[in-house]
Amino acid sequence: LEHNGGYSTRWLIDAKTLKPLNNVVSGNPTNFFDYRVGSSATLVKLPESPSQYDLYRIGNNAGWTIEGEAYIEGLAFVGGYRGLETLASDSDDIAFNGCKFMYSRNNGLTAIGGNYYAYDCEASYNYLDGFNYHRSDSSTPCAVEIECCGYYNGYKNTDDNSYSNNGSTIHDNGAIIRLNDKFGYCKGGVIADSASVSYNFGCEAFGSTCFVTSVPTNNCSIEAIQGTTMHLYDCFTYGSVYDLTCVNGNNKVYSTIDYASKSIGDDDEVKIIV
View 1 (cartoon, rainbow, N blue to C red):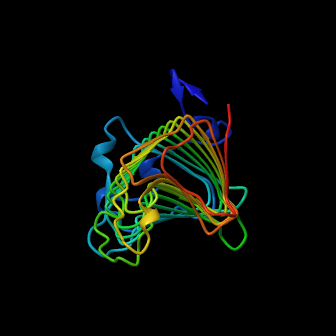
View 2: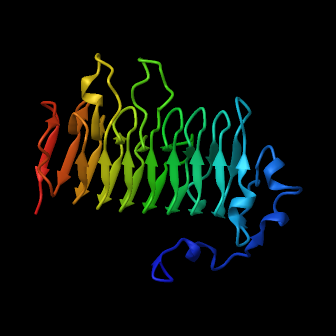
């Protein structure tokens, strides 16, 4: 993963042909409506000024869909009813390098099935979650996030019955590794994993903005839900009512830090590791 002194997902494309953006879509990318790359591997690389090639969707217009494998560098997916949605199988790798997923009326990134690699990406100011991973009918998601961030997700969600808008969240028996990620000011558990396994190294989670009185424990920095196993190595939390909460039972949390403020159920297990 080493590339110019940092992390990179370029190793995914060693055996594949890198195509310039104009070979993948026709016309000016700023006017492109539905970014669909089909079932075969499509690799996208932007010129030196990627900001000139941002893809914009406004209001309730649909977002973009990627089916199959992709390597995407330097794109900002801004707006749209559902942001960017990916549909992938267990054998599909989708990599994002320096991308942004912002101002969607749904999740910033909705990743369904497949294997994901994100480096230096941001998912902020979305109505629901920032990074969201779920299984498909045939594929369970696996993900790696390195030096990613997300802020103010759920910021325009005024529905008090919707109180779990996260910076990063994985579901459905998925697995994720987070390294040096930073998430904050989301309406719910800032990092929240459900019925999955996560390994988190050097991450920061802070400042939940969930103040729904019926679910006070959702004002938390880190949340394990419904049988999640969560490993926390030097992950720092601050600015939320709870540093750590466990919800719906049978969660296992292993942490190098004994968090000061916790909400833990009788069926949950929290262990401090050295």
